[in-house]
Amino acid sequence: MVSDELPELSADVLGELAVSGPRYTSYPTAPEWSDAFGEDDARAAYARAAATPDEPLSVYVHLPFCERLCLYCGCTTEINGRHDRADSYLDAVEREIALVSEALGDRRQVAQLHWGGGTPTFLTCDRLRRLHAMLVRSFELLPDAEVSIEVDPHVTSAEQVDTLADLGFNRVSMGLQDLDPVVQQAVRREQTLEETVALVQHCRARGVSGLNVDLMYGLPEQTAEGFGATLDLVADEVRPDRLAVFGYAHVPWLKPAQKVLEKYAMPTAPERAGLFGLALRRLGGAGYTVVGLDHFARDDDPMVAALHAGSLHRNFMGYATRPAPDMVGLGMSAIGDIAGSYIQNTRDTAAYEATLAQGHLPVVRGLDLSAEDLLRRQVILSLMCRMHIDWPELEAQTGHSDLARHFASQWAQLAPLAERGFCTLSDERLDVTPLGRLFLRHLAMVFDEHLAKRRAAGEGPRFSKTI
Image (cartoon, rainbow, N blue to C red; front, side, top):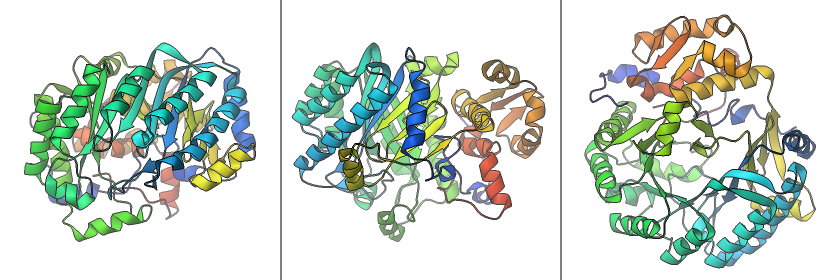
């Protein structure tokens, strides 16, 4: 559902709404996790998950290496021009796979496998095959599993695509961000339309059934005219099955390289909102349905079917059509969501390799979720994945009763957002409006108990701007 004409909001209102806030790839969010959570806690979580051996897993593998630094990037990366650097890292990943698979029960089934980074195609063909072999020795990929990887078209070869296709990868996600040369030069991400189209065509020729493209709005020197041209070219020439249109997160306190971008003209909050509104209109007109916070998919894509069926899921890998109760994170900085616990590995590559060489899991922090955390997570997931909250529906899913009473104070806090046209409210249901999709994070923040407590105490973690 995409509105052709979104209501106009004044610059003052948009400026007021451009606050710091989470993206809710998890709840509770990462600042609430504790470094007191360690290897023993992780092993306890794996033991709980091992008690349900017939449940499929999602598995994420983090490959941090890149040959170059893109200045907008917020990922955990290691910039390195030596491809043999990956060998000792893969040795460590192999050790981690062995430890985790043993803790979970050997040869657990996997419904979703994703390699992210970094640039996973930093790995040569032989190394891609080695990593895949390591995984399938310890995990069983279901016949209809989604097997996906992130690639940079500027550095990914046809031979690597051939290797990935031979290994059974059926979805490829390509970073693009913006085709405007001025923007590309500012963020140090030069990439032509032609090389992107060529890689897409080769993927399709090799039978890769799913193609995703990532775009970004709010980048330095970005304009409505330039971004509109990018949207049109991507829809007409690249024609991906899905798009992710992310808002650029300017967090120089976490990513110091982003400080360089402050010498350029940065879109204001009203301009950022206008850029995403432009994406809603242009992509909607090109046959894409908006899905969740920032994804778009063709009307016949499984993601749209999952949206309508109420089975869409959101995790650390983004939106997923094949939800699994537990998600395993492998590699430095990787995050797992296991049996009611979040588990994060060290973000230091050397420490990651050294810890595994000693036979230990490289866990540095995590969280055991409380019953209230789990309930609020379900509410926020319903907002993010279904664009509504329905108390009878959630009561049936969670086993809780009288949720309207439990969340009465939050319902009252939503009234001003409803008055602004972001949602419609009744006694038992909230529905996000087309305008409200721009402010989904604001709606979710109302249910964030930890954030509310921090703000009441005059403290709080720093997040990217919500607009």
